[in-house]
Image 1 (cartoon, rainbow, N blue to C red):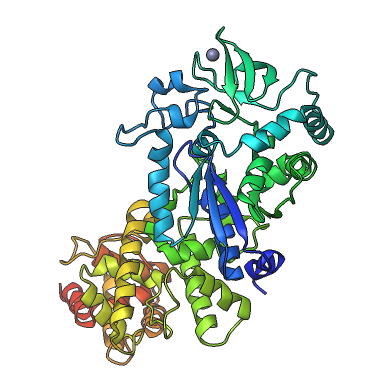
Image 2: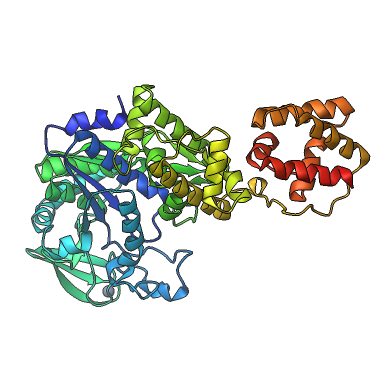
Length: 504
Ligand SMILES: [Zn+2]
């Protein structure tokens, strides 16, 4: 059974509310998508329910991130919702980063209800939970001390006011609670009071999290393994919701990080990240979903935006086959859950992504590429929808070539014979190859085998034989896998290029 179906079994009986969260402190990367798509897959598997995305917009800007200019220094410590947006086109900082992320989610067809934390506080939705937590502050303190081993002072209050003097959060010392006011003195010297029924302040994270479960009636929540560690905020949150807020804790789904090949876990603050938008542009929305859904949440995903993309795309096409040809059930289910629109009526005819990598560099028009695919038997019949899918994939390939592909897969086919000097043995090899072309089929395998055969026949080093082709076609010493590459080129073009060389 697919993991999303297993998780859905736990909560299906209710109309499940699944919660996810996001910190809008910078561009939202692929790692951030894992939480959301994990939650969404569980709802899809359950067949009904509601997905929340809670935006931690009242949290402070913690530091000057590499993508911010120095003018942001003065905003460190202020709630994100009170900070101007970097491009000045959005209402605030939060909206600046959320807008693109929400566009991305739309492309992935993720249906959700978005909740901004600063609005929930402003609307008074946290009031009851905040009151219970403040009324029980000793018990809350004991729970946190027990799980974390941290010692809290006797006069600790589980509440962080936003200072009305300096506008910063987390700098003030709370001196008392006179319902509904939390009294405080800030580092800046300001003395004030915060109304718990407003956005004058917020609960600290370990209390905020269980409070939002009770407010939104959350039945299930996927969260990163940091929260799940022993003494982490899951342990304390579970006890706070059960003992203080007297509500059931949600069903937890712990997920692992996405690692970027050779660089470690993705994180926007360290700059090790691929944004969600880039990911869609390079593989299309279905394969973004597929990347996340094919692995169980508790397994690390190793992501390689270089050559790894070719394997990922092949893997997707294989799962498609499993779906349409009664193959592996879990794989078929992964494919089904990866779809953005309804599943295609019949198995799409595909040109593999790795073949398109060559084709889009050889031909600049899609009709021509489609024809080559038909001539080489990859496409059996014209189908408008398949052609449309192919065009989208061709766009993805071009984006990947421009932004992420390693140099080794890029080439430029020379329309005219490049200015290269060939040695006699190289010309002999081409003569022999030219003769063999009269006998073999124009297929990747035969074209490749014939390079070996002809090189052997005239006693030429095989590496040199391959290089001869790259020289006369690309003006380079290396290029894409030759058999496949030649088969994708126009047969007459190749034959004429060879004759031009040997007749010189
Ligand atoms: Zn202050």
